[in-house]
Amino acid sequence: MRAVVVHSPGGIDALVVEEVPDPKPDHGQVLIEVAFAGCNWADTQVRSGAYPHAYTFPVIPGLEVSGTVLGLGAGVDHIAVGDRVTALPNMGGYAEKCVVDAPLVTKLPDAVGLDVGAAFPVQALTAFHLLYTVYNLKKGDVVLVHAAGGGVGLLVIQMAVKAGARVIGTVGTAGKEKRALQYGAERIVNLNQEDFVAVVKQITNGRGADVVIDSLGAETLDRSFDAVKMLGHVINIGEAQGKPFNNIRDRVLPTSSAFTRFSISHVMPDPLLWQRGMDFVLNALAENWLEIPIVQNIALENVRDLHRQIEGRQVAGKLLLRISG
Image (tube, rainbow, N blue to C red):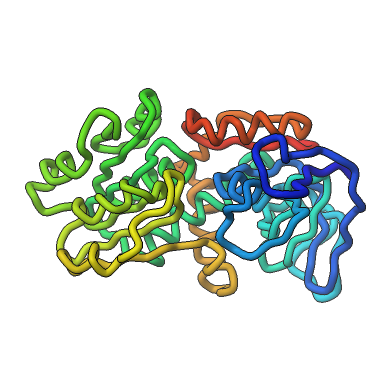
């Protein structure tokens, strides 16, 4: 089968399309013929060697896929060969076939296309668990979300607005505020033009945001503690701008705020928690109030362009790698 292989950490030239042996499902695993693979910032970290979780080279990137079930390992009984599914492999999604642990494979409703099936798992489930597992979102809460024009940011906005929360977002590129505002954000701050802390304080009459969701790290995460209310919560999910400060204690002390560094991988081992998020998102898709903003799907052979666009941070929405869809 064809797959994108990274033999050693590097830039986009490290992404190589080549023939590799077909994977085989072990006990409790599912073999999937991949239609689409979702692309996330984490994939660029895997390629560059910066991904914070354990893995080894050579590696096939790809943490979310959609496709058709080709085979089942022993002990799998909740899906069948031929089912259309969404799934989260532990790497390996940038390939014509991949194997996934059965608990992370979910049958897609007929109304959900394979493109959407590959576009929502990582980002939509992350958004859900940020708002309802790590935090307990309530009507009237003020949510500050950085990278509001990105995949997770746009989904956080939709879910928060649906719950009756107020959303303030930030972007780093002019134009990325448009979709965020369409989804109901009250205010979008361009980080290159305004001080987001001052804007949040003004909008909240000096109180600060109830919760801050940050995927940027570096100085943006550092200053987010100045934008959160007393006893508020700052949640970090990435370091796109670089590593932040070292002494978190010094940042939480002034407001007795809470801090969480969240990873969706820490929710996966809990079947009830995982199913709660999946049910929420699939119901939201079925009810047509949650939109997965797919910007483009790109052929397997052009995977380098996919990573180039993600690292350029010009895309307001989701990019997919088209395998056979």
